[in-house]
Length: 301
Image (cartoon, rainbow, N blue to C red; front, side, top):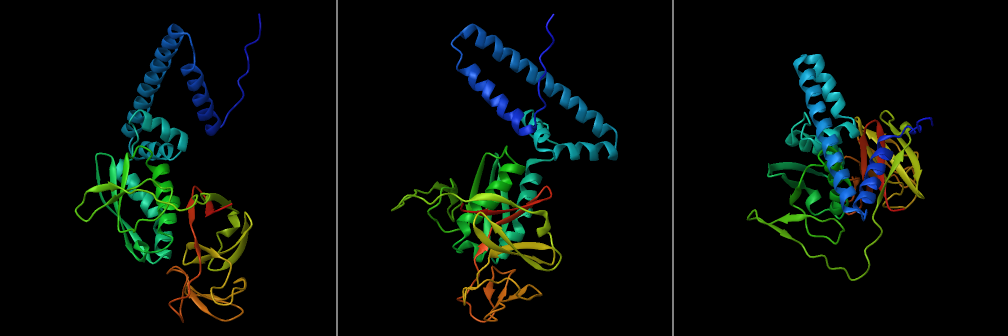
């Protein structure tokens, strides 16, 4: 008798990738009868898991505060959250998860001198409004695509759509429904005179960036960044003075104001790095997100 094959332990991402691969192979099967039986088997297993998860949650919530804390902690695990969403069992309402995602990116929005507001959530479509200087900031498209969009995809993958007010149309790869003043949504045509640039990617910073009230320089993907902690909020900028062009490393940081160590130009970091002396000068902010104990920045490789 042959020994049973040992299935290697896989992480959540590997498991999900294997499931998708097996589903693709099943769809490509030429044997219709076998494919039908396999699909029915998968459907039955999924339903059985759904019933089991529902009973687990019911028992946890019936156990009082301790059980509820355990249920909420389980829902924070990405793989468990995915399973709960598949069976419509996620204990945190969609509206709360959307609001939480927007709170998560608010520090970055504020670093551009703006804010984001959830106006409504109806039929699975979130309607948000950009406020302040974010509405006409040249980095608004990056803010949307790399900060808001990712945060919503991670916290609320069951969200069916996103409508945005208060941002000017820009040539981006982001599929959005822009809202007219009347409240009607419309699709914006994308017209480009040249091929679109390569999309930015997220890069994780070392945990050491969680410094206390100071700055440090990080070299990521060939880019030199200045990371600053301003009253507990981490902000990232290109490590280059908008006036003299030299590195900002070693500049004094006080009350959110960074002073260039070379030309002594002062920039207020909580408001998109604008110069304290000349409104036309501004540092270049870089999208930064903190999630699950990690710190990530968005850069074009």
